[in-house]
Amino acid sequence: MASETDTIYALATPPGRSAIAVIRISGDRAADVPGEFVAKCPQPGCFSLQTLVDGTGAVIDQALLLFMAAPYSSTGEDVVEIHCHGGVAVIQTLLSSLANVVGLRPATAGEFTHRMFHNGKIDLLGVESLSDIIEADTGQQLAQAWSQMHGALRNPVTRWRQAIIKIAAELEAVIDFPDEDIPASVVASIGERVDALIAEISDCLHDNRIGERLRDGVQITLLGPVNAGKSTLLNRIAKRSVAIVSNEAGTTRDLVSVSLDVGGVPVTLIDTAGIRQNVGPVEKEGISRALSAAEEADYTIIVVDGSRDDWQKDYANLATSVGEKHFLVVNKTDRGTTGTPPENALLISLTDNYGVDGFLNQLAEKIVQANSAQSSSIITRARHRWALEATLHGLEAGLRGNLEKAPEIVAEEFRSAATALGRITGEIDTEDLLDAIFSSFCIGK
Ligand SMILES: Nc1nc2c(ncn2[C@@H]2O[C@H](COP(=O)(O)OP(=O)(O)OP(=O)(O)O)[C@@H](O)[C@H]2O)c(=O)[nH]1
Ligand SMILES: [Mg+2]
Image (cartoon, rainbow, N blue to C red; front, top):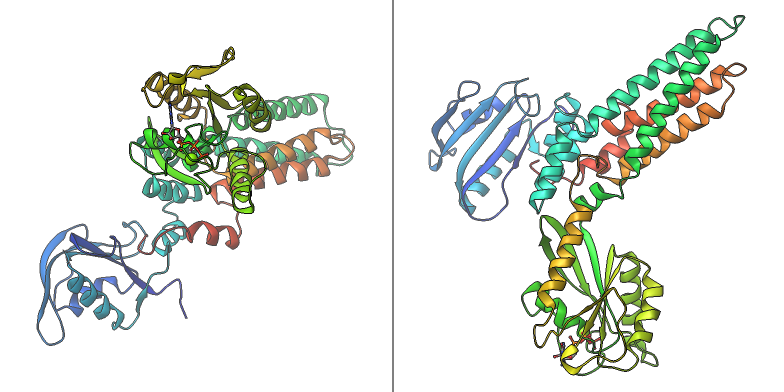
């Protein structure tokens, strides 16, 4: 059975052919591993070039070995890294040799990081940041991940938690002397301090989900009547032919998406089926998916054919269903436009390339402005938000309680607020949560 004290190993680099591959080994038996290949374990903190041979004396590879002795390693255990040539046979031979070493077993997903956490090398926010650093697709996501690693949320959470624990402790002291009245000055001071904490935490929660959006990406949906030019616009933005374009109404049936980097903000742009009445079951399903995608999106681009008589009516219907966060693109102006467009209309012609760059610049500006990491946005996961909401809830419930008559109930509310904060950094936690977080890592991390 897998144990937390086993020595574990894994390929730390992606599988397949590469110039160099790295195999990591962590645990008590790590320093014995070079000996299994008739090589010497280097001095702690040193690399050494060694020839690794198998049981018959045949050379497997010439590799750089690195040894980091406990506790001065990433996992806090003895760690050996084999920096070998990244050939499939080299990697496979080394891994199957390691499988035969008594006391060694392959690591499970995220197990190296799990050990870092258990050995106090990193807290839960650090674990999440590490995952975000590896997953980051854009520069802004990377900057946010590092800012989280360096304490963007940890610092205020630690300060708030200490303040709440101090307040709860002051209350406990009062509870210990039940015959004495709580001095009015203590009641006032606790009220003021809790008010200030509530204000600070609420402020942090009112961040428009910028941090989470930057981490998860922004979703933009193209919506509009059939034949308006949605797929043409998607292809133009993606700079390649992703979706089929044709003059046949109802060409797009399913959702077609592309991933984009807009000024460092990761964006998923989704093309959808054109909206129209009286259609068959397949198209009907497509339209229902289109409307759901627009509902879930952070922004919707409503595309209409400005040369058609009823485009204003189409726009009005769609605008009502998607709400405020939308852009109105009136396409096909090369054929002329009917009626007076509303003020927010962006007039373009994809065929003549009229107004398209202007629209795209405006779109990019809006996305970057609204979704760039800001020093004030320190919540990057729904988990953080829930915990901060639970903290607020505890503090507000405490304030509503009767400090003079039932200080123990108030203290309990404050303690629950401190517990919720402790969950963010992992000081207080359940194994369930840890398992969920670590399982998102790849094997070898
Ligand atoms: N005249 C003109 N035609 C355009 C313009 N933009 C796109 N078209 C044409 O309009 C037709 C429909 O374009 P699509 O991009 O397939 O339209 P769509 O909104 O995706 O249509 P569905 O998928 O059927 O909902 C194609 O023949 C395009 O070449 C434009 O600015 N002017
Ligand atoms: Mg289409």
